[in-house]
Length: 471
Ligand code: GLU
Image (cartoon, rainbow, N blue to C red; front, side, top):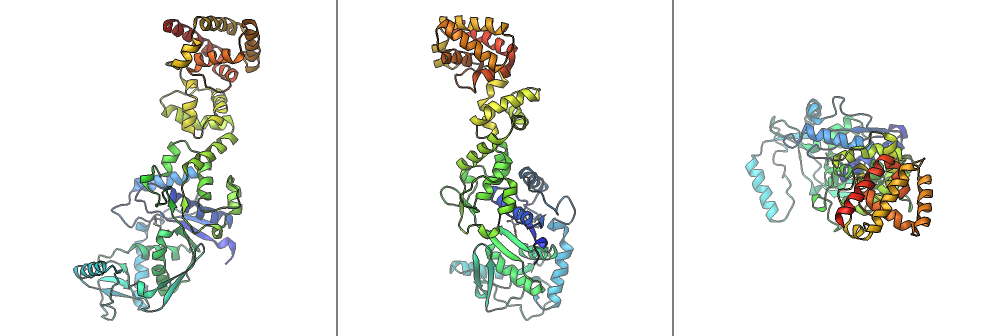
């Protein structure tokens, strides 16, 4: 097979949002396609009509777009939703009947249910006994005629060969008696007709694979290669679920994680390249190989994800981050400055101090609103009669400062500390408390220069008033 012919697909069932497990499956498929210069297809598996919704499709599409996983074929083009492909399933079912590879079964549902219950009581997997195999019925549920003995081997690219004894399998239903095709049958027909070369999916589907392989064989098609990616686990090693906290891609977006960090993190969940942790998208594409994906479950580590997010934030320019935090500032009920340069400067001072965009807004809240209160301990320490005098002096001197730049501000403060016989840190903390309401902030001269003369003076005056009331 030539490398250029790689065709892979991500096939979500739109029964909910895209979760991290699905996102990682999508990413591995995307990386595999991009690495081989192949085609990445998005297919919507919406045959379960009672649980599939258009809103969920939109949400999955939005999550993939946010992650930057673009598809070469798929919605909104028609023909990539299973509900649009019913004629294809019918056609393939008819071919199987004509070739004698499938047969109709009219066993009453109550009988099948009773047999299933008995098997369950015996702790056995239920297998349809093949009662209708040779009855040559013309209607009913359509079953695949599988070879009764022998084995089917899934030659998995991650797990190696996995053998299934046909004794474990049965003549499974391809099309129900009401004419609706079953999930496994649709998947096979879709993968065949979309000319999928590599099926990369979660290993919760491994048990479906021998059934599907037997169906490929019955249809006379070669089977694609399979790679079943292990599950993502919570810190308790149980399969990751809502119990472990938010797991949808949108929840991570709304928590202010960068998509680049998310992609990097998801790639490293089960895949590695030496000890390297940080990979650009291009590096991932160049280095990714499905064979390097581990067969063991990977534990989801929120702390590491946030560490990566911070690393990505540090590498970004203030201008980029400024635009990224704008909606988060608004979401916090604050108003970002209209001036992009000012916002960029703010972001620049905050990027070392936060792991997410949401945290960045929290840490930098004082940029967007005047302090509503002052840290009580610090106020007791700094808002003294002496402190008031110093605030007054600062107002006076800052008003008259020709250039309101970090450099000029620093020189002024140094001069004042010498004159007053105080330490620079004390004057700086007093100023921080006055402009930010707390004694922790990015470098204070930067902060003042970014706030600008007017705003700085307004805040110092308010602090002066407040400190008068407090004493
Ligand atoms: N629709 C399945 C799911 O969402 C994926 C099936 C497959 O990839 O073959 O889990």
